[in-house]
Structures are given as C-alpha cells and as structure tokens.
Image (cartoon, rainbow, N blue to C red; front, side):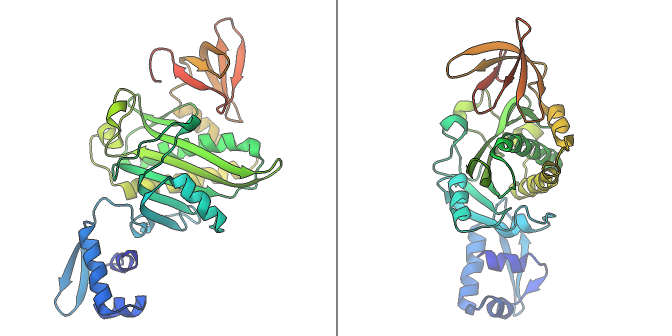
Length: 321
C-alpha cells in the first residue's frame, strides 16, 4: 500500500500500468492496494482509462506522508511505520539489532505495551497520538545520555511550536507541557559498555488528539492546547527537523546554545519543587540546569544540590509543574 501511496503523492494522474510496472505487481494487485488506501481514508479518484489521482489524505502516519517534504539529511531516514506495535522503543531496539542506520524512526499509531520513565505504563490510544522512537548511534560516552534526554524534549517542544504556532514548555527533565499540563513523555534507553555508547533509542509519546481520561488533571493534548486539529505527520516532520538541527549542536564539543534554549522553555526553573528519591526527599527552589543536564536546587536552608534525572522524581510543590 505504501508503495502505491508514494507514487500517488508525486502528484497528477498515475496510470495503473505505470504503477504495475514500477512495483512489479499485477494490475489486480494495484487495484487491491488502491482499495486499501481508500479504506484507510485516502480519497483516490479513478480517472477513466488514464489511471488514479490522489485527491486528499487523512490524518495518518504512513511513512510516505511523513517523508513528503521532510527536510533532513538523516533523521527519519528511513521511516519505519506499523499501525500497532508492543512498544516503539522495543521495536527500535530490534531494528538496531538488524543494523538499522543512525536516524531510523520507528513510528506507530498505537502501542500495546508502551512504557514511561521509572517503569510506568504509557497509555497509547489508537490514532490519538504520535508514538515514535529515533535510533541514534552517537560517538559519545554513556554520561552524555542525560543531555540527549533534554535535547529530545527540546526538539519535541520546538516541533510542536513549528507545526502549530503554540508555545510548549518543558518540566525538567523531559515532560513537554502546554497550558501547564503534560502533552508528551520521553524515554531514552541505551546499549553501551563502560566507555562507549553502542546505540540509543529516543522514544516520545505525544498526545495529539486526546489523552487518557484518568489523567485529565495533569495531561492534555496538542489539539486542545492550540485550539485546532493538528495533522500528526506534520508534527512528526517538525520534530525530526528540530532534532537534527539540535543534535548537530550536541555533536559540536562545547556548544551550549541548545542548553540555553532548553532553560528558556523550562517551567521548572524558579519554582518551588519537591525532589523525591528512593531513600530521601527534600524541597527547594529550582535554580538552574547545568551543562550536563542536571537540575540545581537550592534547599530551604540555602544548600545548593545537584539532582540527576535518573535518580529522582521532581514535582511542583503547588501542582504538577
């Protein structure tokens, strides 16, 4: 189906004979795939004795839709799409084991076993969001992964703003928020030895059209926050373009511009927070995010403490943010 869609997206009328020849399938197989596109919501016109013409596309995440107009060199090359998977992070790990390249994107309309930070379940309502994981093969030390977590959150926030015009902020370390509520969760996992990262899977789940009903007090969706229906393929492209630009900054040793831009989007800095760890907790005021991505908190007795994302949960004293 995607091969036919890719040809139709080129514009104009495409003959059944041309599709058949280019894909190496029968005319009957072409007709069957056109019917699959129609069943998926694509409006395909049959132009008598001339071929097929694509009139409109649904809000879908099929690879050709995301790839159309994508202005990146490696991020999202290729886009690997399945309507339903267990988890895009797990799928992306399987792709990594099959030697998928740096920049491959695992993309799905729903997950049956989505996961968040600290082992939490991540609900993935079908066709209500974007569930994606980007495969990275950086030349980096494992200690730098915390920075990539923040960089991914920044890229999602920038992608939302580029696609919708609406401002998105970040609750440290990696919750993207709009109107004070969470719209995206991010989970990075890596395969590494003591000295070198083998690969990283950078997963993001964005609530686009809806969020789980039991989370409405702390979560929202992009549509609600910006007041209109957003096309998921457009938002996916915007994320990939932002991520590739920001990743280039990450690779340039010593460049901190992206950290400054992360700070500018932080809804945590300047707020009173409660830091909850496995053995202890404390309250204080979030003062800074350092160059390694750690949160600097000044406690109520004036002590400045550095907090690492993997060790604790940070909550606003007066609410979610």
